[in-house]
Length: 274
Ligand SMILES: Cc1cc2nc3c(=O)[nH]c(=O)nc-3n(C[C@H](O)[C@H](O)[C@H](O)COP(=O)(O)O)c2cc1C
Image (cartoon, rainbow, N blue to C red; front, side, top):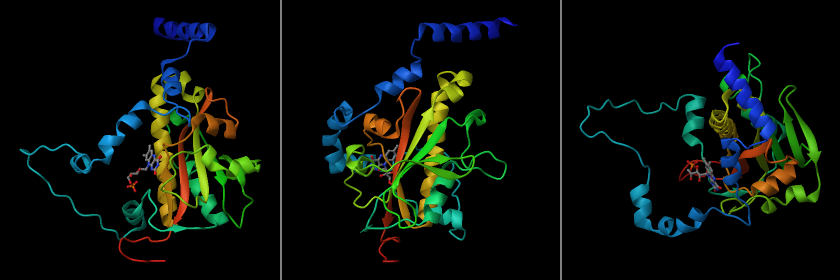
């Protein structure tokens, strides 16, 4: 065995034997929030964010190279479905509607997130095809499916019913800052089982996991757009309460992203289209 492999294997067994936390776990645990503990900067920045001039100055930030030659690109064609989904994707509801999701909508939202594709990998790419993420959903409003907390089983494209207790539907106990939402029809959680890729990529695996969770969320948002639903990513999770709800330990498996799904009643800008 060459020296490099030997060092790597002994490092890993030292870590297991001493039970020391890896850097990504320290970071992950330190960035958790709950109703009892919010990030200090979220309060500090409130004054700035309430200032119109600050918002104006920071609107659509981007770098510029004013001395460079510019090549103007074509505007999006909007003649195809994908361009339309990208163009009309949104996170905020304009007109709130009480809406019951169909089984087809629910099926396609889960499949878009992490379902199998034509070559039996997934709709979202994954570093090393190691798939650290899991997908869960609380179906709050559907006439075609029992309400409840489900886990998405990727292999057979099915939902496994985990819990139908009342506490599952009391989403304000585990989600925070819901002022933009009135009638959530479904809440989705993306979790990660970190060992699935950290054995290969070490702390760097954490980056890959978060990137993958973003890809999953974007897939779900685009599928939601197809049905004139809004799927908004939600930073405002009470992580401890969510993990309790999902019956996961928060260390080996922990929440990395969440989305709230609601029907949009006013789809096109300045035009009632439903
Ligand atoms: C990681 C992440 C966390 C977010 N958290 C929240 C949230 O807690 N509440 C909310 O209303 N929107 C949340 N959003 C949505 C953003 O507010 C939204 O993307 C932004 O205002 C731009 O609007 P658009 O997505 O409609 O283009 C989040 C988005 C991302 C990517």
